[in-house]
Length: 201
Image 1: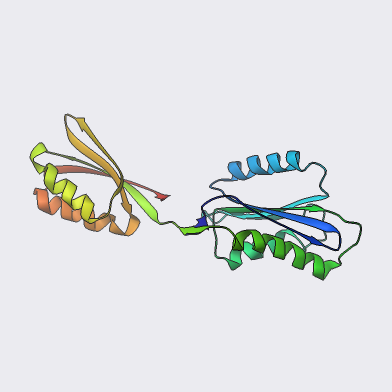
Image 2: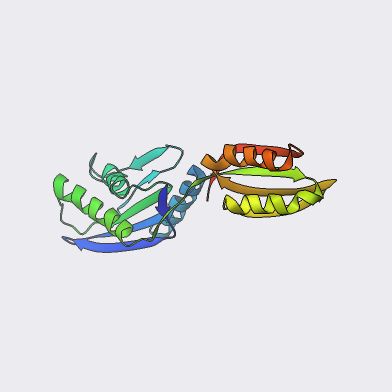
């Protein structure tokens, strides 16, 4: 999944109107709602607050906020999809300058604003990871640590609950092979728990 590493702002003028695009990495609808509320409060005197977002879950929403249908929200979404991004919110704030742009130029302006903010943003790729917990006998410590290192485990937590255990994340595609190999190298003398709710890292 491609997403943004942080906030980015882009501003330009078109026939007197000012367009301010703001791009954010987001992970939930609640986070989107919170950002939109803050933006509408901050730019309370703006003519329009148009936006689009696309989440990794597949949820998509956009708003023209009073602009002619098809000129704003969908054009902002087009910019997000042009860059192949997910978990992204782009808001374009417009201050009307007194001259109507017409449907075609207006749509182009909203796209240009959104694309400008995304073009200047830092983009990163994230993968789906699965959390695994392995409980093992103490003498197997070196074997287990060597194994998870081989699979480039992340966010490793060691603990003890009657026996040593280790919790970590590996890419979703590595889970079956890692568990199978862990059973092989320990003769099955381990307890594994796999959390099948993937997270993006």
